[in-house]
Image (cartoon, rainbow, N blue to C red):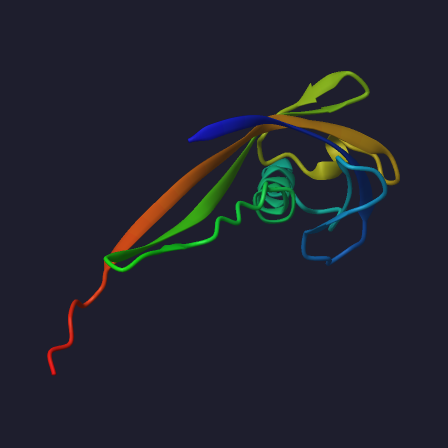
Length: 132
């Protein structure tokens, strides 16, 4: 397992009835979150963690090792944990308050957390020998 810091500046866009959606914008570490004005801060934390795990993760692409006895492959699993969200210097709790109680439409907020990368390897033995 390897942990790396997660730091993202997120622009908030409120739109009634919208499902949470986060996408990368501009420079590295910048994103936009479109979410309903009735969503909770719990929803914001969850949306950012999902975005970070899938879109900001370090993609580990290791070639398989293939020899006459076995094949070895490797994959990575990425987990993001948002530790804090802050707006105008104030930490915003992960609770069921509505997003509009803590954040402002069209204004950026900061996200801090960690990204954990777990590497999984597997080996497959090959069938041996053909006798003629």
